[in-house]
Image (cartoon, rainbow, N blue to C red):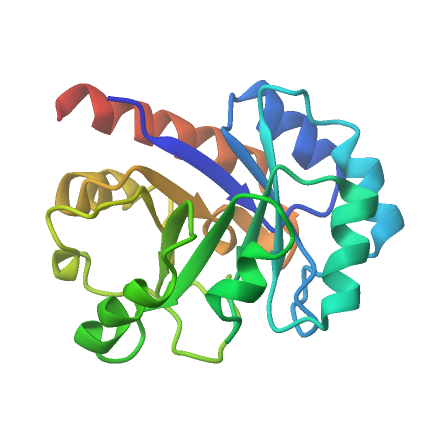
Length: 210
């Protein structure tokens, strides 16, 4: 079993370099308008150049106007787009890239899961602990026992993950991947190297016991 690891909300070159060193599968760069981790395109291009081909770059947006997303795609050339807002399937698919759709789990789980059917073009889903309309990276958890035992597409677990609890999350929800942002930070957008290392170690340890 290989659990994909996505480090999200990176804003500094040293954090991207460490993510690469630790063998992360995905590096997430944020362009959501209200996020404290939002990057300018120039910053994002600098960080993107530090990521080797074997690691996928994910551009995260949330109800950005179409022109902004087009500029991100053209300038950054991300491998994956991640949508956190009210974007519909047609819009998400229209940029010609694989995409993850975030599902807000901060409300009723039943209605959250029912929204999956509205995104047949999605390459995968990301289940986050925030409520609908809120920013990701909030550090809010949801009940991992709510996750169905089988989904037709890959899914990443997010929301309140940390080095201390990611092992429990893996054993409970059995996700395809995990996405962490605030759980490895000392401040929004400022990653903590020790927490990053411990997070990866915790994932590997949990995998060995599954």
